[in-house]
Amino acid sequence: MTLDLLPIGESARIVAIDWTALVPEEAHRLRALGVDNGARVAVAHRGVLGGADPIALEIGRMTVALRRVHARAMQVEPA
Image 1: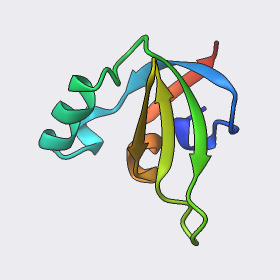
Image 2: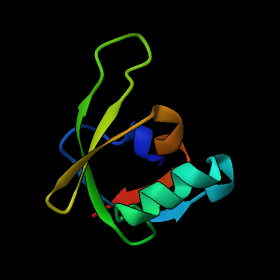
Image 3: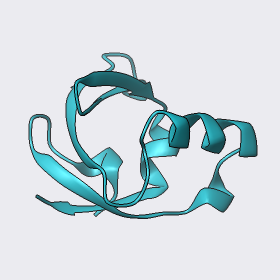
């Protein structure tokens, strides 16, 4: 399943990321925040507008806002 489909509040582990789907600068920034293979994450909130952007992602003690296109590039499995 991709991260954009993970239900709110459910924990998961990132198992693969299609880095080629992201702009290199954005990929670098996400890695610096700890968004990488093996990271444990949970979706905290989704935007309320039409596309449900952004997605608030809990990773460790941080909350990071992601665009849906970024979340769609990440494969996760339930933790």
